[in-house]
Amino acid sequence: MSNIPASKPNQPNDEISLTDRWSYLNQYERKYLQQAMKVYDKIIESKDDILKIANRYQLNYEDIERAKQYAFGKGVVQNQFSPDLRMAQSWQRMALGEEINSDEVLLKHEILESELVINQGVNQLDAHEIAQNEYPWSIIITKGDKQK
Image 1 (cartoon, one colour):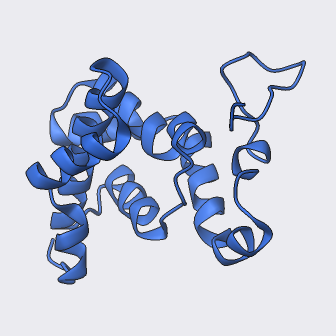
Image 2 (cartoon, one colour):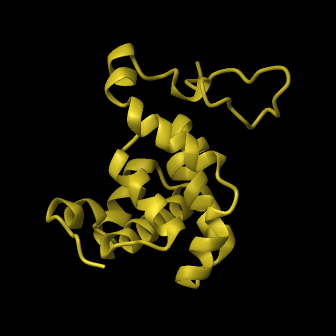
């Protein structure tokens, strides 16, 4: 049985409504993670962030788009990721051109992890470990990177 909610009749088969996409979280997770969920939803609704980030970092538009969908969109439901407010804030800073050092590490981590999972068929846990070894975002943010 799939953990992905059935699509609505008016929606394309590969799109999930913003309300349906959090259905795998229990009521306590939804309450606790409500702020992060709202920011994730804003990121998915944003139309100009990918180009801004791609231009800012001189990276391929398709790589940024894939990483965004993986980390904040379809990948959230497919992998049942819990929304992380720090990740969402990082993405928002990059889109605004107000990034800190750790934000680029997150971006490259998500680009690599999404490449491994989506294009190379690596399972998510192994892909995350590989990306974490190359771009250790969670370790960096634990140290409290506040530098521009």
